[in-house]
Image 1 (cartoon, rainbow, N blue to C red):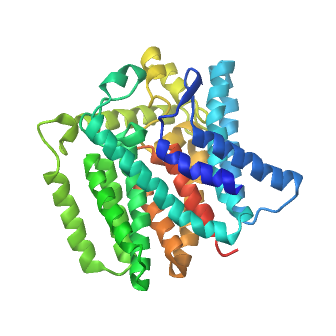
Image 2 (image 1 turned 45 degrees about the vertical axis):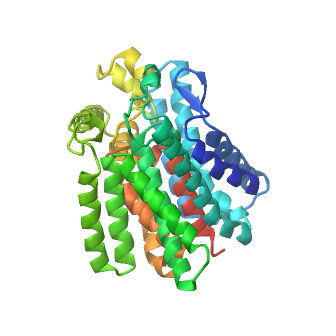
Image 3 (image 1 turned 120 degrees about the vertical axis):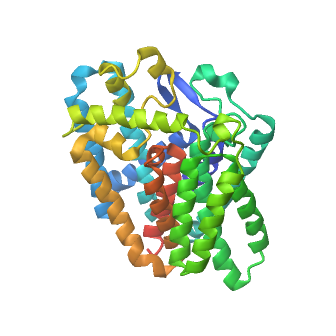
Length: 397
């Protein structure tokens, strides 16, 4: 289990570069494989060795969400071929695999759990450094446009090939670094200078993504972080500087670097409208998790060729609308219940230490960020957050 968790963490900086596509619309990444092996290991311990899951409530809620997703898929099976059914069902397997990370941590010893903090910082630093290499030597994805990627001219997208998800990931790394710096500064730890240096280059990298959704996440996380530490005056000044910097940094003459660009806003509005139309016709149980791509085609909201090639055709920009469209009202209730339970646990435990604060700030920020991009279902971000949750809820054991 320790080996699998280590491999998972250090596969995250590779993003989507090591993608395998055995069949159309099915992409597998190294972190998918490691998460899948973690799931098998957890299932073996629970059902073969008869070891008990400690976080039963979370286990029941996640299992219920997966069950609702599968039932919704079965109800809509008449609209799918055997192949598209299996492709859609694969999304449930992926979510189950990443969610199993939470429960894997109960089988890890305390010494290993305590090492997770520095390993996540190392993985985040590798991702950031790789992104700077990309930013200066590979400034756009124009040559990969035929594979369904946007060109993202002069933007920091690192190994994710998407500045919005890269920006969100960088903010999560920044939150981790920020709490570590405050914790170590009180103890006068020698590593603080190195962490402060990484903190600065990570913050600059966030601006280089020119991602407004990442900026929303940064502002939200910063506000929650400073309020938790009761730095109210600093919060006002910092947020003001961040907002001003975001408008000074970009180049308004280039569409992708213009903070007032409307093309992406219009695209997000159109994406939300498509989701709402699908929801209106499948409000109770949805179109199946995750048969969203095929539902768009069925309702004439996208052409077949373009949707099958696009890397974003399988979902919508808003995670809440995505869950409602694929699992209906039943699914969104269970989904929201899961995050409420996590936040309630963390809110009660903020006084316990650094890891509770890191996880709380990261999740609150993502719950806002996911209104604009489907970050709660982006695999590297899912892995990062579930690692934080698993580590936090099992740390005291």
